[in-house]
Amino acid sequence: MRILGALLATTMVLATSPLALKAAHAEDLNEGGVDFLNFAIGHYDIFDNDNAIDLRVEYRPASSVFIKNLKPWAGLEVTTDASLWIGGGLLYDWNFQDSWYLTPSFGAGLYAQGSSDLDLGHPIEFRSQLEISYAFDNDARVGLAFSHLSNADLDRHNPGTEVLSLSISYPF
Image (cartoon, rainbow, N blue to C red; front, top):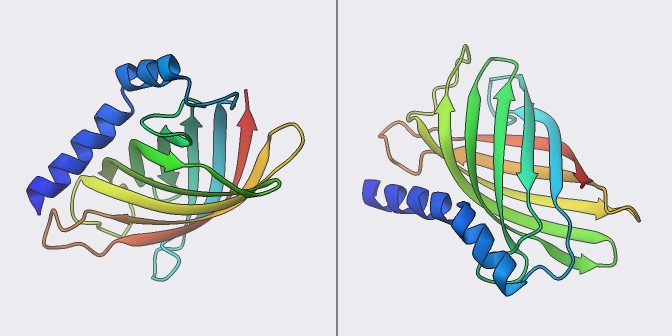
């Protein structure tokens, strides 16, 4: 399982590298999208005891990689308990009806526990997320996201945690 985790982490790093972004521009997979700066606030560890506030900022470039609407992202997540996660990965931005988007994403990153009582078991943590958002005429979006952080059994101790967030994405 550790090899699988290392392979996933390597894939995420390569997919978000400048070379992958340059290749995506060369193939013009994007067709006129915009870059987003995404801000989110949420409830960290919603199903258990750590009642911290989760704050997140992400950069989501318009450039698709490999297939249309599959895009890299990079982000920083902190809690009011001083927990920290920094990482990146891939998202799929699906415009399923008029101004509505469904955006599943997956990424890998580094985690520091801070003063939280929640020990996620390993410094490498993976984040999977599902976000639904509404896009306004100026391309700005407001959304609701549910995410799960886990070390994917890189350590015997793997409690994982969930976050429910409200997000705002600003185009630029």
